[in-house]
Amino acid sequence: MRSTSCSNISQLSKLFSHRLRHVSRRFLWSYDNLAKKDDFNQALSDAEKLVGYPTSFLSLRCLLSDELSNVAMYMKRLIGSKHPLLKTARGFVYDGHYSMQTRGLLVLLVAKAALPCLSKDEVTIGQEVVSGIYPGQRQLAEITEMINTAYLIHCGVVNLDSFSQERFKDMEFGNKMSVLTGDFLLANACTGLAQLNNTVIVDMISQSIGHLMEGQAMQTNCDINDLSQDYWYQLVYKCKTSLLANSCHSVLKLVNHTDKLQEKAFQFGENIAYAHQLKEELQSTKIHQSPLSITSLPVILSLNNDGCTDLVNTLIKTKAKDDFDSYEELSKGLHQFIDSDSVKVVEELMAQYSHKALEALKDFPDSETKLALENIVHTISH
Image 1 (spheres, rainbow, N blue to C red):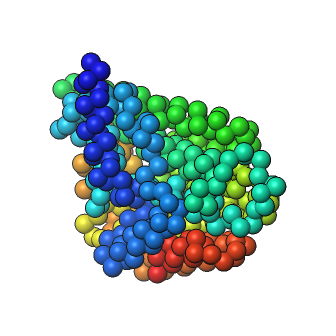
Image 2 (cartoon, rainbow, N blue to C red):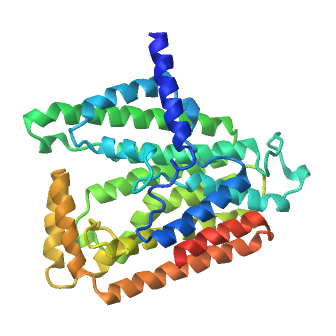
Image 3 (cartoon, rainbow, N blue to C red):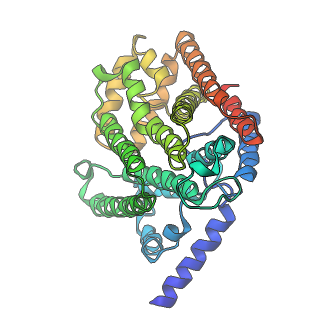
């Protein structure tokens, strides 16, 4: 049994080491335009060198543990079932259209950019700086990645009442795998949080975990009457912005930076998350064969166009049945309702949030790391 486990861990190790440079780039950023994608990837590649740490912050202690090596074996049972967990799992490994988060990288860049503002007398963490970053700050970046990944996995739980008896067992098994795997990552994240010995940070990150759950509930229980610009702001804040903003805040709080700089770090995380979400939604409208989300701002702003409300209502009912194939195909029809006025509003908001993110960085001292953060913002806004 032990040799089998070691063999599984060895295989996983080879797989993850091969993709270590690329496994951290999904959900936060993806581009259909090749030139822009290359610019963004180049900005990330340059940033990786500055923090001295590959941007896969899913701890190998977790990924290569006996528990998750067993999960990898059981995943084979889900092949062909179309359970959402399979798509999420592919995103952990394959680059291209699927790549993982860059939240951890941003957290580390913020930590390093702020370091010159800190005197050694102010630091109470009792650790030595490595590549301009304290080990506790690296741990916090890793925790941020684990929490978001756990959330993505938990989002794969489906409504079993919607499936026929022949598909029920596979979907039920997939749900169990999603819950257990997500819980395992969350448990490791919470253990890591406790090891930081800072109750204020535990409180902030715990709030973000709560926001993720609330955001998922908002999407699950979405009604046509809920869809508004205010709804979009709340949804994006809970599902994306809160975790990144609070992590950027916490990574400076951990080493006793000034309250003002901590607030600027929060503002940077908040605004870059909003800017990117708008960029991602805007890019989706330009690919006519791509599905559109009913909760995306371009769709919400186009609801007054003839026929759009009817299609959105149909999509809400289809989504409630967890009919993934039909939902994806039907959602492509939303492209016909997206007008130029809606696109213009999204472009203006994206520019505003990008500008606010850059403004928040002005309180950080000039450095190569600050420039890397600015370059990442520019790849979003252009």
